[in-house]
Length: 57
Image 1 (cartoon, rainbow, N blue to C red):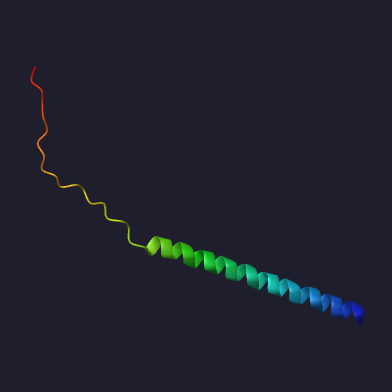
Image 2: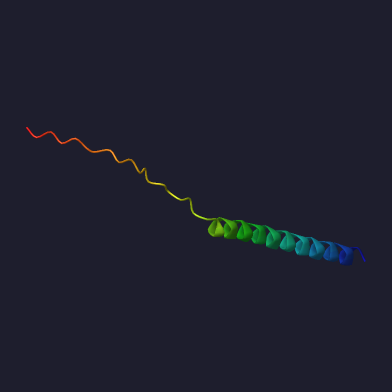
């Protein structure tokens, strides 16, 4: 009976480890999806209307 309990305990531990791994992978996938869905920053070009000086010598 002792061996059966050990086998069952190992099986339950493997199932728990597998579930934890799946949850970590799912969380990582959701985080990457958030990053991909985030709007890209808008780059605003400076709209300065300054005339450049050109030395003509």
